[in-house]
Image (cartoon, rainbow, N blue to C red; front, side, top):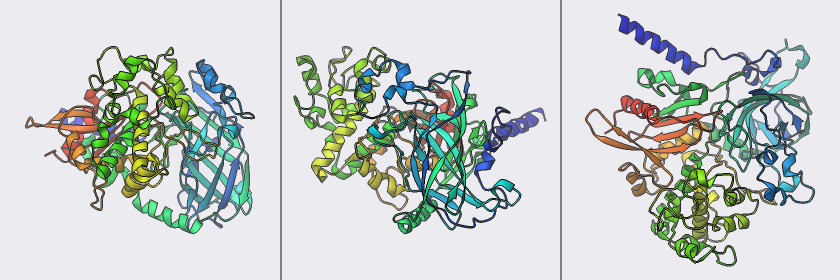
Length: 598
């Protein structure tokens, strides 16, 4: 009886943990409208009295911010680090100076919205909303906005009686970093009038540039003035159809406990204060734990854009390599990196020893971070004195990045490439750029890796708006992706990408879009392959299984399972947070319990 009672207590505790019970407003000084329940239609809400269509121009606005510890906020991040003089010198004439970009400001950017007959509020701009450097706002932040809802304000709300309300999820992001601070916004509208934007921000995902410290958290809120230009959205009919298809493509989301006792042990003793959500994808349904914030449960889990750090390596160079291999075979992996660049035009070798080593390095070596060039490991690569790494990472111009990438001497610990894994982020960027130049040779000068991924990998699996940080351009078009970090997925997108790997590169309608043989090999060994890590699992019959893993700092993981299930973990509010091997195994063990591996 005692054991049975214990199980009941554990089950109740797990359900409470999964359900988000106990979430409360963190501070009585927060405004009354800040609760997440005010950003979704209330029960029994009436249909709007009029549709919404037009462009909102937000005013750059100082946010009220509460930091933990108090006073820890870095308002001017670029100046705080003390190593970015080289970028500041590149500021175009008339641009807001780099060192004055303020993390406490909500960015004054523009977004167009339209509504659907089902009460959806749909943004036209679905990638990162930003401006060219010369026109940037005074804010450190940029925006990415997701679909929300519209409804008629109840008559009992005296101030806004006769108005409609529109709410949407967004994330404050920064193109060069991949950080995403989760937010919600709402405004009222009536005819050609709109209210201020009421907004709040809470959990920080992929922190590191500002929120490096584990105990360094922030919440914020504010009211921003809006200029509204009412009008018909260009190509709205096509956008309406596309959104209807997008909604149909979304995987249903249900509470994780609905999978039963098999998932109760997921995470083990992991610190739940840094777990944004845990999910299992089974039979094309996402079973997830609720997203808790200091203001209540996040109400748009399917539209939430998160930063995932180095999971981007799997999502950009890894997926690009698998797609190129399907189209053109695997020989390109053995081509030399330097053959895609012009010596003495784009770069110069430091010395003869460097030249000899570089001439041995292939795209495959770079994709496995085993070039044998540069610093010996991650810590040495990103040490403050490793100026070349920061110059490569943050330079505005691709030409400068190329020059800095090749400005490296051989790794002294090895005598050639392919001998030792060294976690060097820029190798993934270089591999992606070399693959793009390979693609251009095959398909013409307008071909890009990013467009290939969007059109040939992500859209075919129902990822309609793949978004990531890229270099800035004068036209404000996306530049070249940072590749080693910067992807801003939704949980739906991660579920579909994990499912694609679990299905060995096959779409749901039976089309092979990735190199099946390469993915099949992922499941046969424990080695790091094409930006995918591995976990080794042994079942009760002592049979070994190798589980590929997309992995990013801060506790971000996707596990494509050999039984077709997909495990997902998203972290927040800590760069250094991670799951131990034992904790990661709980996700794999749960998947095996649900549907035993064969």
